[in-house]
Image (tube, rainbow, N blue to C red; front, side, top):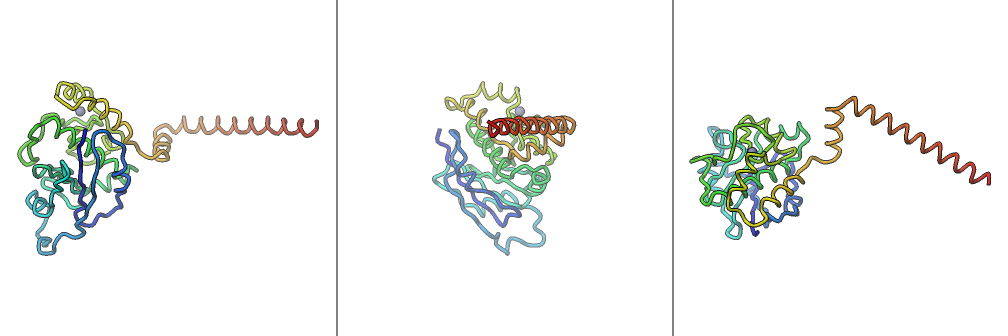
Length: 245
Ligand SMILES: [Zn+2]
């Protein structure tokens, strides 16, 4: 599979994104070839009446990379209808961190997880629908309103994005749906195994476990201390008899 992606940062971002990590993400499904930036949206367009970044404005700012199958713009500005991702043109998609960035930070989810989740989503949709419509025209029928921690959750309430960004998966319905579609050989296996690797950092997962299972955390903590104490005692005894001869 050879699905080249170009990323464009559109305007200043409130948080650092590790673009290097995204470019080095091991995937058989896509490759991020280039990252570019437009550091500031022209002032003439950024008037006081400006409430969101319309699809027309996005199209006017972004020059699609001819070497990439899709160009993905990432911005802090809100989008039409407050979507977090919109396909605005053939080969051009925009992801907005408006509100989402703060929701992710509050839940200790790296913003890169959210971006990767959306890349897998848009790449899969591009394969499934030969002529994927723009968001303003149609929402693909595979996308569902129910929140199932699935790549295709619509997450109309933005806080729901937490579920499919902390541990993205394919729900049984979407998996069955995709298996009936014509996809590149090996795509489904690669997709399922690669999205499993989108996880919170280990220390955040430990923190989540403690928050969700406080009693187990205390039991494990006490058991660990007892084991360490026992091991230290045995080791001290061993040393004592070793030195004593
Ligand atoms: Zn689903």
